[in-house]
Image 1 (cartoon, one colour):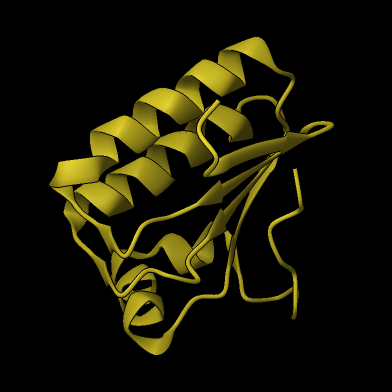
Image 2 (spheres, rainbow, N blue to C red):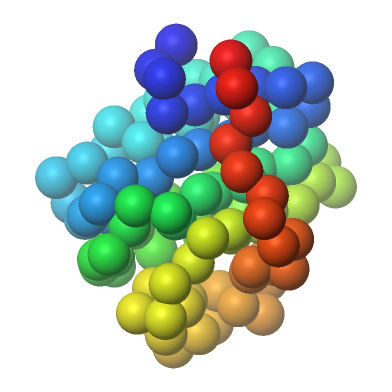
Length: 111
């Protein structure tokens, strides 16, 4: 499993890259979906600590995983979101669906 994806129980942590764009969104989507099929994932935490840029394909990655996990009663969180990314999440309406930066100091777990 990719080091940017960590599963602890029913929670999947996804450490996002510096640029969440069309160049790497497909890889993130594919790996997250594989893990979700294998594991009983009920919570997804997207860690934006290193992310400075996100385009519409990045929004699609978040929304697609949200829809999948919501069907089984799960939830999605976005942590370590900077002002630029938060603005994109707000303009896209995602902020109404997922929790953003509500858990202060939450970090990716150690493998």
